[in-house]
Length: 149
Image 1 (cartoon, rainbow, N blue to C red):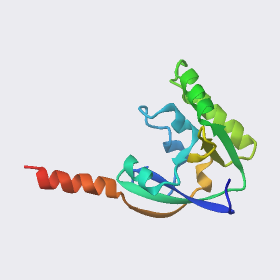
Image 2 (image 1 turned 90 degrees about the vertical axis):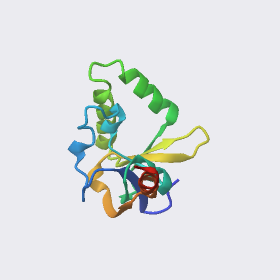
Image 3 (image 1 turned 120 degrees about the vertical axis):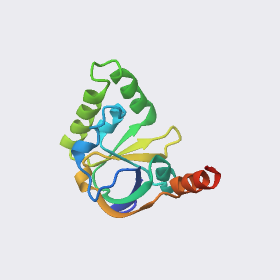
């Protein structure tokens, strides 16, 4: 599944930071409940660029990986939306259970057996190695300037 001791994954954001603060991941009251799982990442740099004006590259260890099928994650999300807190508690408890088992990275498995999304369950193990502007947002800005008043 993962070939090396570490992997580089990408996170799209418009926030400006040099290190991940685990407390900020679900601090936004408008954030989806699955933000309580941890730092969402993808191996697809282009996809990450669609989620914010910056693409941040993180290096993560691959020695303590858990997996969840996309259907199970969707079920967790659907069931948790009935909770008074909008699902935050169930997601946070699931992540805590995996961390208690020593897991640091969660791979979201697709129906075809591949994965395209990951969650750093313990964001403090995600080492930021680079950040650059998202070309997706740069293109929007150039288009707005060219077609603006």
